[in-house]
Length: 303
Image (cartoon, rainbow, N blue to C red; front, side, top):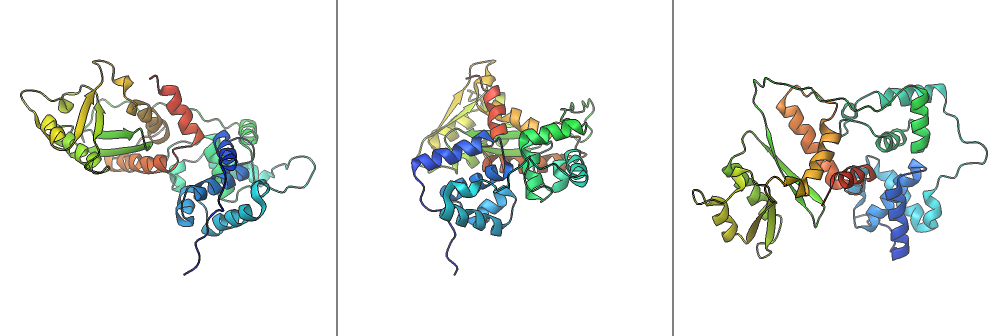
């Protein structure tokens, strides 16, 4: 069996420097991608996992790791010759414009709209350009008359096929989002979701599930199913104050979900919409440190 390819041991200063490059997200996309791969390897991720997260080939991930082990941070920066920055050819500009006007879902990506960061990353990964900065991409798109405008979702007042409910939970400690899509939102559905959350932690570890005051969540004298289950399973059900559901940190995650997976969409079926939401949650948990995602969540959080 071939020896596992992994990054050499890095110290705290190197870790902070890598994290700064990844979080800043400016400058060369190639540098940003390479730093991301190195940081993920340092965090214990295998080559196959990094390949899946970064949408690139295993050979490229191995090359980046080997080069960093040999040359350190110098290997993260493209070795371009001197002179003025490269001018993109007419064919490259046309392809960039074509990609920008397409939908990410058309390329198998789990979000509904492009951002400069995601589009630049995709262009380099697909080999459309060797490298491009986010600012350079913004200028090019402006020159080509392409802008990322948020389109309102279509308002529908008749729903012949019913609606769907998203049960979602955000783990503050792990920075992970969980969700189940159901046809109804009853106490039985809520308890089913709570049982799934309970399985994510050891039984002896007490957990708290923070909820708003929606009736299926409540423990009442008429129906104590939620309270009885919580007492029997080492769970505390905590409630936000009335009319203050915005204090729940899950709400900010919904804002990001709408931005990435629902804005500018018009799904023809519940199945397609549910698939987009599930793919987004998988992507979001693998890219919890994505700079754009963090900005949207931070802007929404008020507590």
